[in-house]
Length: 263
Image (cartoon, rainbow, N blue to C red; front, side, top):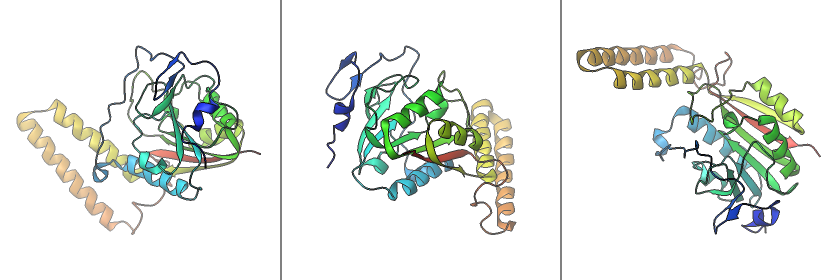
């Protein structure tokens, strides 16, 4: 059985300092702040978050228990229940509670070659200025045949400034992963045009609440209520399952990647 603190034996290089919970290879950048997303009950999740969770749950379910896992860009670890059956080393450039290694994700990762079985990059790749470097480093620390799982948003607002750099298409993700040495790469769209439209509508509703007041707000809320009702009628008239089907019109809200390191 793998030891829970396997990652300590896999560390390379000399950290700046360490405590009982983590090791630091960098000091926290002055312009970096914790992601302030609050825990929300599952029924209040956005469609994007729910689809990311469901996809990762499906992909992880088929993998053996007790794997050495590196959660790259672990952040607030909102999907922690999915990885509880593995021995996880969280890595981030900010000392989040789940981060065991604090380091610059744009540089070489301070872990030994072939030290882990699974690497997860959940909603992190858009925040990496050197994605080719991180993907190559992920491949390096994975053992032969190891799995890399990625979920990355495509339609989303600018978030976590000033560390929001890219949006990726399926073509870019496939090419980047293959160039990083992954032999088997499967890229899937998550969400469809209806999900993207709902995201747009929810953002407009927040702007309405923020920027209007009095009779104007009352009128705008009434119009948006009517819009939702009309949209619901449209959905009922569509062929069954169209709203829940995979994207086929070029409007996914996210992409997911399952890649296997080449032998």
